[in-house]
Image (cartoon, rainbow, N blue to C red; front, side, top):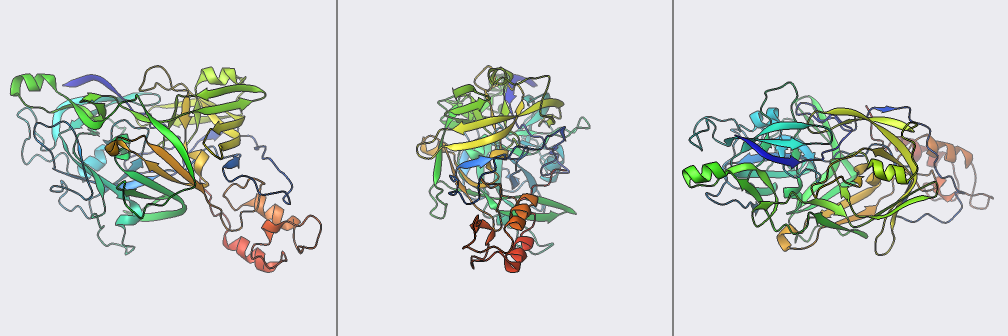
Length: 502
């Protein structure tokens, strides 16, 4: 039976994230101008830590490993947390047959590609869980998910277990060695969507908000990792999933208040199949598990309290409908806000090809706006010369989002996302900026060691602290002179922080 309920999944990404090839940062940008970085005297005081200039168009892609188990609870709709995989693995060789997917706070329900569903043995037919299904872990129901520019039908799993962890935690660094899944955390008695393999397009694998809401997730951009698997390299920030109370969770300096929208969710539950309940007097999922209020699906996601925008003297302030989405590499504003900011839709600064979780693809205009602010108690987060894509996206609360805050604004920050759902608390985002060795220019720094840094270094060559116009950033080893020893450090760090745009 096909569900009449449409599940909302933003999963807005300029990357082609597919089951067979998760490509980090594949962004097709057209007619991109040279950005107008703010260049100030390098002898001026250091800029505020939470102020960035000219962030990239496309940001990072956080990846996690995942596995599934058969752990469900009969006649119970609410998912339960577990700090390690609970139940029997669905895959015959779980330490080898695990999947890799996107950690996507913009997805109201988790989804697994057809290819990864086969890998995890979710289409097993050794027994039938339901009288009208031939599969061990699937219901006969189909749900429709909606992305930024399309829809796709997915199968609905029975209530089972879904467990995730960052790639570094499961990799013992020995090529060919089995993965260690013991640190994986997740939810059991959880229903999610799976690709059905009916069409050429295979939906991506995305671990959605239901798991992010129940745990604390640290995304460490300062320490990127690469995992070799089946001839492919997966490159990602180091992602770690923690229980909310673990003492080793880092504390970051800046707390960005978040909230759930729609408000009021108290648990993660699936919406039940009414016909099956009437005929069999038992519950089973009609659609996958989302954040819910008393078993009613809310599809709540993470939203910022306020976002301010400014361009050429035009302002759009205290906007409350901006979603925080780790599945979006780009930052987005709706067309109504673009009009308020005086942007000319017929003359964009660049164009981006948007591909979402449903396989849809569409060109969208992009612009550089003067300023984007996220008000914070203390030092505000401020980005200047900000690339934004203009695109209208439906909100889970109704109407359109004001926009999406994507990962491109946080490439120079480590992030901690506190879900808070299990503690009946508000969610939050903590950020802390890090600085790469030999990051010299521009004034606000960009986290990438490239030609801008080399030009500033060349201008300071052979100077000392006693010289006029001394640039202390170029004295990388802090010995009082900009010389060959500093040059060696610069070359050793060349292209650090660069996110390849294929």
